[in-house]
Image (cartoon, rainbow, N blue to C red; front, side, top):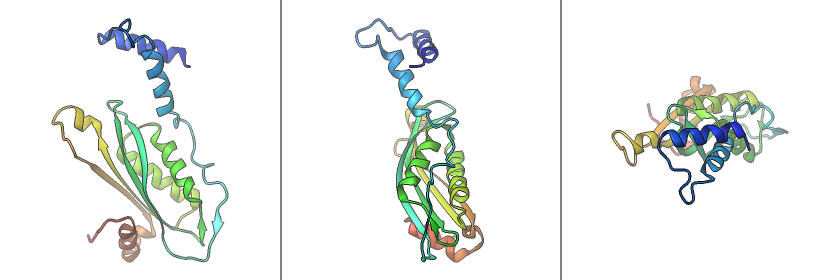
Amino acid sequence: MNKKAVQAMQGFLEAVGVDLKASGMEKTPERVAGMYEYLFNGIGVSTDDVWGELFKVENEGIVAVRDIPFYSMCEHHLVPFFGKVSIAYKPHEGSIAGFSKFTRMVEIISHRPQLQERMTEDIARAVEQGLKADGVLVIVEAQQLCMIMRGDMAHGSKTITSSTRGCFKSDRESYHQAWNMLGWDNNE
């Protein structure tokens, strides 16, 4: 356990008026420090090694992995945002990765203080670079607790971000096919 984080959390909680001597609160600084240590365990971790062995296939089609769950922390308020990530990519010369690699990569990137927009770009970049993919589309759909818990209390609201790279940017047919594979009807 990171003693500096525990002491800082204790100081913070006391500063906002939490009685750490109350029943059940005695170990809260340790628990919170441990939780944030886990939530931020993607800091400084590269996704380069996630991909492992790539496989060659004859298929020239688009590969899609939909609805990968994630939890992250908004860097502005350190409040969670969570949802799902969907990824479509066009393999370069039939080079693909195992599907579990995508969930691990999303976990690493989401376990950092984040903005949804940056996280979307980071995921697209990781797929493009790690697989040398000819095209990548990433869609992130999330609920932002900073929107829901304060201010307008926008219950039920979701934010959707996307990043498009490679042939999905230049080839309209591939672009629409990728969006459709991810369950979105994008006819712009």
